[in-house]
Every structure is written in C-alpha cells, then in structure tokens.
Image (tube, rainbow, N blue to C red; front, top):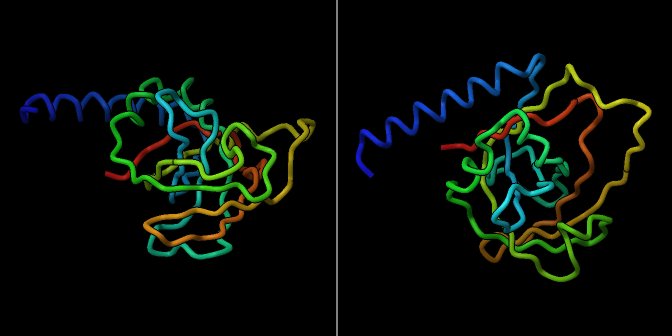
Amino acid sequence: MSSVIRITTLLAMSSLVNDALAQIRDPLSLHGIVIFPVTDSIPQEVILIPCTLDNLKDGTMGYLVMFSTMRWTQHDLLHAISDLKKEEVNIRGIITPYVSFFPPGDVSSELVEGNIVFDKSYPVSPDVPRDEGIYELELTINDTTYLIKYTNPPKEFGYPKMFIADP
C-alpha cells in the first residue's frame, strides 16, 4: 500500500472516530483486552477485560458488552474490526447463559487490546431486567490458561458507543 493511500485512509478513519466521539455526551472509556467471537460480521457481544495482557491473572473480572449497538454511532465499525491484527485464543464457558458466544467445548476466538467507550448520559433504565450473575470462562493464550470472571457492565456505565483498537 502506498504511503499516500495509507495517510488518506488514516485521515478518513480519524474523521469517523471524531464524528462518533462528538455524539457521546458523557464518555467513560475502558481500556483492556477485548475478546471477539470469530465472525465476518459485527459480533453481538464481546468480553472486555479491563487490564493489559501483562496484568492478566486468574480471577480478573471482565464485562460482557453488547458490541453490536455501536454500529449506530460508529458507522465504520465493521471495517474497523475487520482490519485488526487479532491474536487467536481459545475460550471455554464454564457457567454461562450466553450459548451464542460460549457454546459447550472449546471456542476459537480473537483478542485485541483497545478501548470501549460508553456514554454515561444514557444510563440503562432501572426498569430493564438485568442479569446480575457472575460467570466464568477459561481463556487460553499461548498454552497458558486463565480463569476469568465476567458479568454485565454496571448500569451506570450507560450504553457502549465506540470501539478504538490500540495501534
């Protein structure tokens, strides 16, 4: 790819990121490990573990984030996640109601580090039923297995609006 095309692409991408950020009134940005199911489309949900790979350890708490809702504010979302260099990992749901993401047995998944930006100005309604359970999964990265806990994000986080991968 020529440097002119690369620079033009970066400028276009930063313009889209700035447009999406302008729609977020009260941002909460969480940086960490993001685990994607292997798919050619925008995944319904991802696991966000707010730590770096260097700090990952057994018992670390993560969040099951509704990822597909970001397509309404981040119009380049599919393009943004398709172009990522992701690390292949295996996950196994231990106790989980989320059959679509964690079917029984080992599941090939992909991992990147980045930020998920929530908009706290749109808190989740207290009337909306919510699963407050804490679940576990085994995450295997390069022959090392971690037992990770995860739950839904607190209502105070608001709605997820944007994903920004680390370069």
